[in-house]
Image 1 (cartoon, one colour):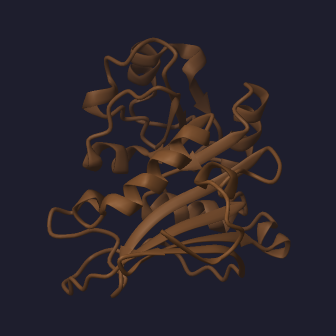
Image 2 (cartoon, helix red, strand yellow):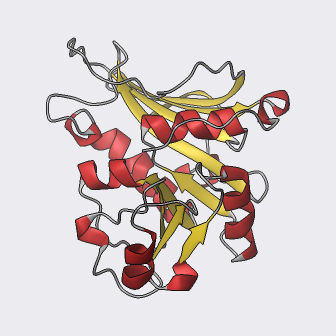
Length: 231
């Protein structure tokens, strides 16, 4: 792996957060902008070098934040750190319904359709009602920090990333661009209403044509904006 921009250090040092609380979002796309391949999953376009960085980011994180729809599509199961699901409906994906107690949290709304069911599955203290009709992601970040979860890794999907950018809670975007073209009608890494978020490139790695960048969100872009849709 070549370092094109950034210091010659280990991946753990390169991706260490500069401060906490810190929320980074890790996404992948093809050269023509597709966030998924023929299967509809991001896993259909990733590769070995992306997996190395993916595993490094998970190893550094205190918790993984993911849209419930993405967790369902990608087949998320329990992992060795808390998974924080974000959903307006509070619908717990099938593979996480029997997760060990305390390993899954749900961030949802007071009007969520499946609120009582989520509390029964995960425990009342693991279900966070943050907003009446839309999930308040600023409040989520503060709540998780209060629980000692200060290095947060979000793995999307596109609707959650759009909402996070709109609400100004993203500190960093780590994005992999794989050297493939897939055409077709695939989502981009950001979905939802338009946003305009300036970024600052901090590092750029390359291996076999795959580019792995780390961008920080500029402070002006972190002002809280209108809420965006969530899965």
